[in-house]
Image (cartoon, rainbow, N blue to C red; front, side):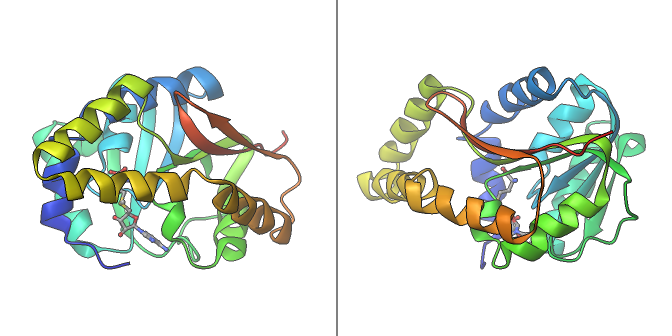
Length: 211
Ligand SMILES: C[S@@+](CC[C@H](N)C(=O)[O-])C[C@H]1O[C@@H](n2cnc3c(N)ncnc32)[C@H](O)[C@@H]1O
């Protein structure tokens, strides 16, 4: 995917800012995992992983295929005084440079929709998950209210901005995308998974690795 890191980051900090702490709370509540190692896949500027690091005892690996995004992650970690709580990794999710069974919680927001080879990506995520580990991979905006606010803020910059975003969300949260996830999970032979779809919280792929 082609993405302008600076422009994306500006939007992540402003329009999307309230999304990340709320999703971090939802992840911690749903998975009950608040210590060990976390992997934020397709982390962008790292705002989800940063929120998790602030709210838990997790050490976070921030993985992205864009070195521009990881520069932003590194400066965000330093600025937040969290340099000891995380590290950045330049890689494709289809080839994760981490040892087997080394990750307790693998999260990802707004990135899975762009992954080209879901079979390889899910196989890799499952390989690095530790026994008892879980994933929370998908997309969402925290609540219906925040989602509405985002649409309104984008409309203020020109109705076409809001419409473009609403069409993207419709595609990402639709039945065809869900089926694509299910096909990828099956192809990767993942034994225990669910694709949660919640009007408030969004669409999330939860994989569990048995103890
Ligand atoms: C829409 S941004 C979302 C960023 C961040 N997770 C957020 O919610 O703000 C998608 C990110 O996924 C990354 N990405 C897309 N495909 C990837 C892949 N196959 N491997 C690693 N990163 C990927 C992009 O570089 C980009 O930073």
